[in-house]
Image (cartoon, rainbow, N blue to C red; front, side, top):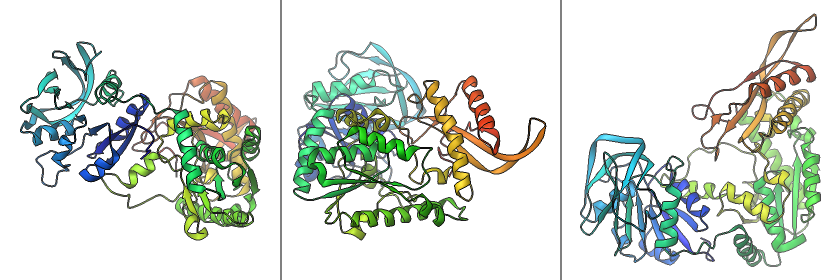
Length: 513
């Protein structure tokens, strides 16, 4: 927990929306953390929260082994807000009645206010909200007033004197247009938070924490050119200056001219000590004749570790390793569901601390992706680094289906470069989550001029998303797709067919491998 900020805690009961609650609260300038539902009262007290939110969840409060927090949470003397399952749990603890509904509410519902309430202040008398529940509260506990209702359920309750509140609807989702106002009312008006969570305040606080952690030591950071590692490096550099060395490895699997462009961007920034290492031939040799995507990832990851370690050893005494771990990664490791049993192999430096005996510095472990970008702007990083679309650690190796070699890498680089140019020319780069080309392991018949061709096919993938967890395929304008296809077939010798991926996540993934 960041000890320098007023904090609201969320206890997670397994809702798919829990992260959204935290993000919405942070958007109104209040620091918020997610903890497992079974966090002890003693632990909660040491955190000194200004308020507590009980999340939704898939269970019924009456189920055997249903997740229950300690009822003593309601006696801590801080405001409590229960959302969906959280409301039902409050009612269960305090003697209200929770029943299975004969008519499950899922989707948009009309909520009608009943009387005045500080929690729902500023909302219209009737508004749309998102419901997702089977059980519902049929009788509020003694001392609670109903402050909103829907056609099929009690919508919201409160005990003003005890400062305990409950919502059956989900204020955190975009489908509840007034939901952010509800959460702001809770954290600002009821909890009394002062909105001290800003990019500037975070930078100041984190720089002080890094200085305390590293002291007079030296640190190393593996840069990828993406926003996470770039912002992490910039923060640490702000704290310790040239005692941080950044290593940017060209694995031969980057986009066209990306190695040079990223190094130039860091040079223009001028506040980082960056060492570029060209190792493309080494990676491609290791990948020779390898088609399995998981083997590709492991080979690239292991090779990166070896290259990084060799370069770090040249620096002399290094005490710390900087990584761009984000808050969603931290949440997953302590979630209500427990740590993930299977983790997809990924190009990172996760194995380095054990090998190199380095202590970890993770300056972004309290931040969501949108907050990372805001901090990057506060630090003055180039927009080219801040707004870069997500790019897989293994690079183009996982966008080349089948074996990887230099000729296929160059083929995909050229096709992908056309995609990037046209997406940017159309003003769509910042409007979609990701757009890229995939080189398929097939050849197709074509006609170019008066000649029959038998050449490669590429797929274009473009998706819209807020966090990468789910994604919809982007409805790119036909004229943009037409231009991309025409240019690739005309300009990239070796490709005679372009297809467009119109699958969403789920059931598909964003990347093809």
